[in-house]
Length: 119
Image 1: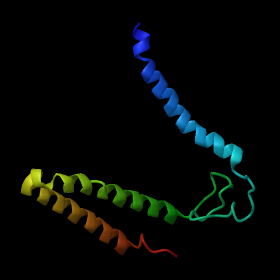
Image 2: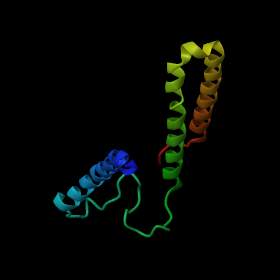
Image 3: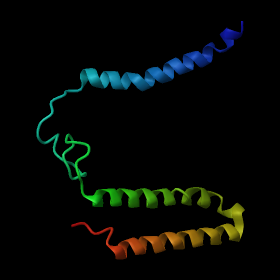
Image 4: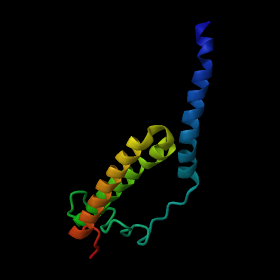
């Protein structure tokens, strides 16, 4: 009796897993797998994709990735702030101005240090 009430949830889980796994299986079956030198060449990362994982690499890639994540996550705070701007009042506005000033100061510091220069 009680199990029949949970059958909808079970069907939902089966459909969710099926919709998540089905494209992967279809891709493995239908997609051509013909790697060549161009497909295996370095792209945006600067080193061979299939080399030793402990091989040394240029630290610039890591720095750019960290800077991107830092500034990208900071902009994620702007959307909820913009949506609730009327309800938070002037204190919330000035708090975000201070936050953005610190963010811009960090960006200028990184720019002056040469973290955005690519050699």
